[in-house]
Each structure stands twice: as structure tokens, then as C-alpha cells.
Image 1 (spheres, rainbow, N blue to C red):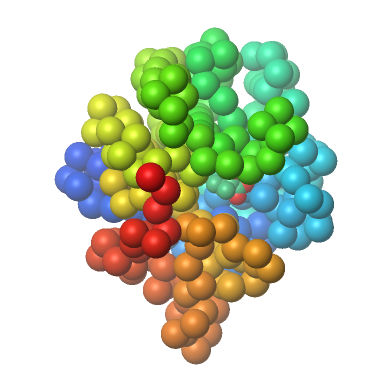
Image 2: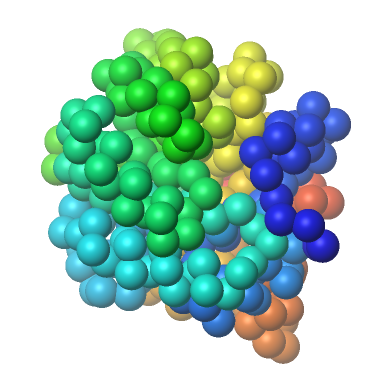
Length: 264
Ligand code: KIV
């Protein structure tokens, strides 16, 4: 991959029906490996609270930690587009979101990700107006784990499915560049992907989305109790680099995700 990936490149890939890939990375070495494997996007995810810091949830992650890891990733100068998570409570109002996003963008993020739907329309609009591209995370939104009472598939009832679709459309209208769907039934994710003009990235959302994302530690088989949608790509790989490349290639050739990774 020679040139740096842009949001217009991702939109063009969606239009052309070419799948693209996002992988989490939290430091310069892994950012380089992910970029060299050909992943179009790196997510500096607040999953770092669980996989690096040992917390049970992403709720304790600070903005300071996200800024630090974004800076580490950016120093690798990856070709992949760097998307950084706005952690818990750093987008509780448009002004708070602008200040937090400014920090992430000035340290190397090229897009910020936040969790939630319709209630964030004004915030997304304001961020985009000021030059900050936004990815909106819908479905299972891990920062709300204490409201959900645990991690579960979202959108299985007609009411929930309708609400996730409405959120996705409103977020697109507010100016978001990407929707990320976590743990939703395959049919719902495919329907949302076909109805939106902007790319939809899935995790535990089946094969019908425009792109797939996995947490690096999950795809390397390092997670103690992996979710159903996780595939251990180290199983047939000699090196970490081979495993990341195997994930990228499997998304692009359509061999990941399979039925056993999918919710209905
Ligand atoms: O923080 C993260 O790594 C994420 C992924 C689970 C999509 O949000």
C-alpha cells in the first residue's frame, strides 16, 4: 500500500464493492505491522483499557491514555487511516467533544470514534463542521455496559432493530464518515450497509458489511474468553505479521467472517 488512506478512498471501496479492514493498534510497532499487512484503518480503540490496562470494561479509560496511545501509533507513520476512540464521558456535549477531539487530532488521529446514535447528531455535526471526521459506533456500545447489564447482541427485537437503523441514517445525515456496528444480527447489518452511502464496518455483525474490524489481541489468540465472532489467526501463522496479514486477506477474499462467527 503506497499512499495514505483517506475517507474518500474508503467510500470509493464501498462503491466498488471492495471490502476493507480495520485492526486495533496501540503502539508504534503494531501500527507498523498492521499498516504493512494492508489494513486500510487502524483503530486506537478504548479496548486498550481491557487488553493493555487489565480493566474489566472500557469505562475507566482516560483521554490522557487515548492521546498517549494515539501519539505512539502516529509515530509509525502508517499508511492506514488512524481512528481514535473518544473515551467515556468525553463527548457528553458538543463542546466537551470538540476539546477532546482536538487533542486526539493534534496527536495524529485522522478521525474520532464515539458510541451512540441519534442523541449525538448535534455533536457529530459540530465536529464535522470544524474539520473532525467522525466514526459512530452502534449496536453493542461497550461504554454503556453498565446500562445494558452486560455484553449482549443488540437489534434482535423489531423495536431495537428499527432504532439502530434510524440511528445509522441520522448519523449519516449529521455528517459521519463511517458507521461501526458491533454484535448485531447479520441481516440487520447487511440491511443498514445497503441503505447507507457511507461505509459500515462490522464486528460480530456478519459478512454483509463493507468492512470488518477485530481487536488485535483477539485475532492473535491472546484473549482468555474470546467472543463467538473472534477467529484466532495465529493458528496457521508462523509470525504475528503473518497472522495480521491472514486476517486482512480473509476479509478481502470473503473467507472471514463465516456462519459460526455470526449472530442471527
Ligand atoms: O475499542 C475498540 O477496540 C472497539 C472495537 C471493539 C471496535 O471499539
